[in-house]
Length: 282
Image (cartoon, rainbow, N blue to C red; front, side, top):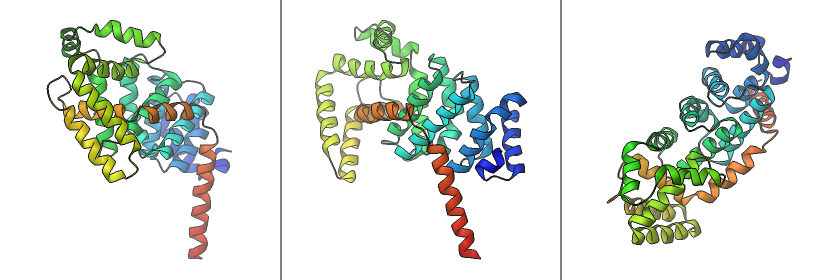
């Protein structure tokens, strides 16, 4: 039935199951995930190996074991890939590494999926491509709670762990709280810079011309470049992207959590496009 439902040949479906098993899943679990995996591969143009590794990471790192929740996760990823410019096929490549980082931050389940996917879309705003965006976020996550960061916040009179805990108590994840805390750090250490950032962010969000918005974004990056702990280019780019696009992050996170029907729709569209191409050749 998976073959019939997805339009994939039986050997292709068997290959998807083999990829899931090769990625570390038990055969019965892989067979249960096969229909949604095949839909994702067929509809999103993602590689079978990448999709299998991502699903294994969703199971292992994000602790998603229920096939219905797995489908919900893949629906969210497909939605995010279309809502932004970090495509679902790129998420399939990068999720295994980044979900491991999310696991270290104790972010699991659909929270891990919606936050990571939305954050990657936001990171594309300051990056030249998917790999750069993912690396910027990976570098940011690696800095969370590091001894040099904790010391720098301490010097500014901020209790890093205590402030993160306050963020968690108000409903933020560790990842979200780390960005909010970075803004607080800049306000504390350099009020003039914080004011300039707030003004620049407001101006960029109102700018309709993409080229002008990009130039203003680069100016904002320059503002962040000196005099504090955010001198690492990738870490700075991650903070700039989030600061500028908090509203986009929030809306993508919310909408992707309830996305449904995207996998079926995309699969149908791909099959129709393929049928049209064959019709033209005949």
